[in-house]
Length: 187
Image 1 (cartoon, one colour):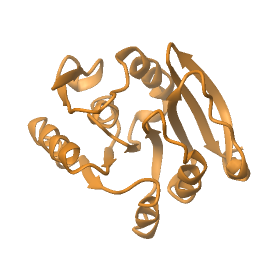
Image 2 (image 1 turned 120 degrees about the horizontal axis):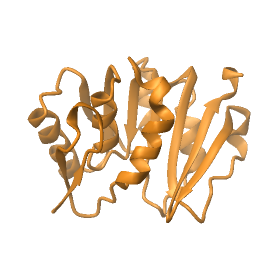
Image 3 (image 1 turned 45 degrees about the horizontal axis):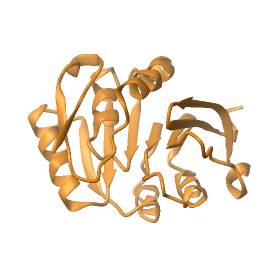
Image 4 (image 1 turned 180 degrees about the vertical axis):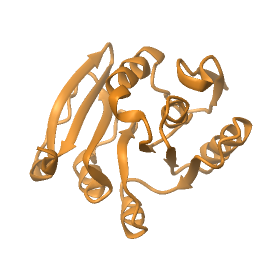
């Protein structure tokens, strides 16, 4: 089992376990993400989908977010996430929840959840981006920001969901790409 080092905030230098089959977001990509998110982080509610190691959601809280929801569908990963949250004494600010994605997003909508920042890091062979984005409608604050991580050579193309989302930025860091989306109501 590997480990991923948190690169900033209150937990800078701490490491989190990375279970088998988990591809954590690289440190330099997280640094770039948090550089872009910096103006939005203070007091934000963060949704970390396909959370894996939980590094993005946990680091967001360490950098000033009010709280984070870490979502994954794998029971072993969820146990590891809960252990990391407990070890860092974050149970009052970070919640771990099991949901199959993208279908489970409907449960968050039904629960009345709302988030300012959403980070989704599905497996690189994930093909349901349109369904994922459709499921996020109603979960993201009108001035919120969604970031999708994907293979850098395969940018996310907006199709039927484009009536809800506007692509505001795209970045490529080696093999990793980040697509930044805002709800159209944000204009």
